[in-house]
Image (tube, rainbow, N blue to C red):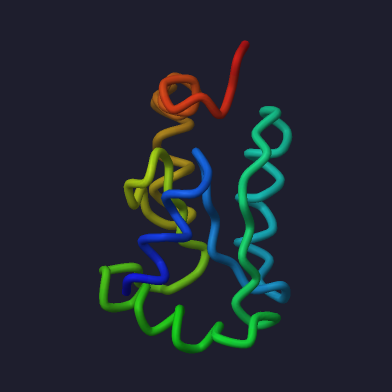
Length: 102
């Protein structure tokens, strides 16, 4: 759990993903298209990926990927990120944490 806390505090936007997950890919693409440069951790390519995935599940990330953190806070998965975007809340949130400047 501490490893996840440390990882999400390093950058304004952090995404835990799996390289084979198409939903994770769509969230990474959405944020990149906005101009955000998130820290992306591909759990299936990390030595401690399974351990981190278990910690994400304990934090309430279900399913475990994609798990999006903005400003160190768990925002949710794809549904929550898309919902924020459709409500026009995502971009202001990204600006507040310094992930976007425009």
